[in-house]
Length: 209
Image (cartoon, rainbow, N blue to C red; front, side):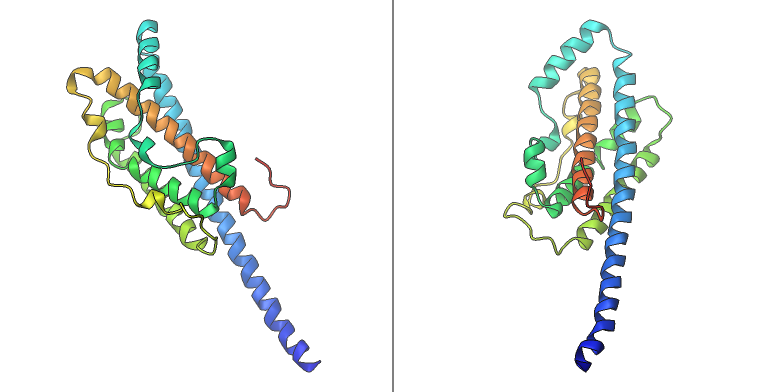
């Protein structure tokens, strides 16, 4: 009986520590989701602003080309729909999100260099870098998750080359369109994956997507 009473304070301390870690995890998730939401809105605005400079026929033609083409990040294995996303582990979603953000570190320089907006190159790079650091912290804090067999797929990819610059100088309009469309698409992906992961780790029992 005495041993039970001795164990109770230890269990209480362990419980408080566990709760504290869970709350810190949620805080990091909140920050990451807020940051990627900002990037997604920024990507949407940049794309819309660029589309606004095009003639209707140009927009239709570029949209047709983009639907048949692919983004550089399409080589990153990721869930293709809501069902697959829901089935993926938190750790897998974090790894994919990290790789997607990482994939834009170089192209983001072209984004801010070619577009006329109030965001300079350093600001865009800082936003992506901050989010990447935050996701990395979340990965380290959620290592206890049991990974699925393909959780490490996103870590086995080869580094990107100058994909978006290889479209050619004579087709800058198409290059900028695809660059912005892909950036918007990828930020939407990361926002979705981080939101699902955050909900999965939420302390609230009624967390819904």
